[in-house]
Length: 92
Image 1 (spheres, helix red, strand yellow):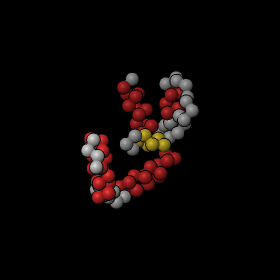
Image 2 (image 1 turned 90 degrees about the vertical axis):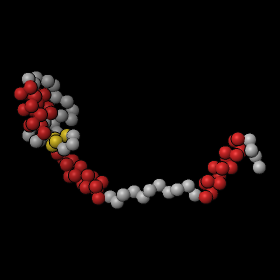
Image 3 (image 1 turned 180 degrees about the vertical axis):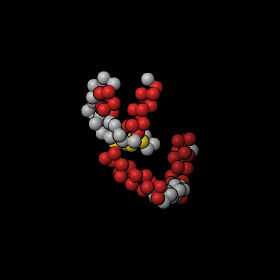
Image 4 (image 1 turned 30 degrees about the vertical axis):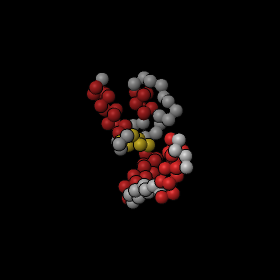
């Protein structure tokens, strides 16, 4: 069983077999999306979406780092202080 499992995993991982081809050989029924070929990336990726996945990965890696969150403005700070005073009963 382990040898057969390793074989099917390797064949699917290089896009040589679909999940449904494996299922047929194991006497199991096909399933709806099981005729797609996959290539092992971090997880299995459909071959027909490989360019999309690679482009998204490149875009993510080349995006400039997000600017740090802005600090609280003076107006926000004043409003927060007023709210705390009001809620604590120290109304002015």
